[in-house]
Length: 85
View: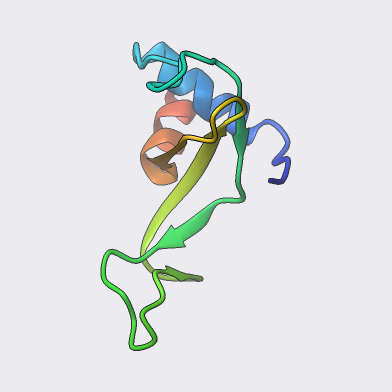
């Protein structure tokens, strides 16, 4: 998983500011690794692929460093809220 500079930290802080629990729902760990922002299609394309570039729902995934649980968040909503702070 790649480092995106401060973007994941800003998005996690936005979640914390909104009162969203930072602990993993499975193991209570509070450390996360981030993925590159991506677009996720809500319906598969002709090949059955869900991940695309340039279309779909913009999101970022965070993986728990302890158990590997993956959480996904809309980057457009979180980024907009981060800019308001």
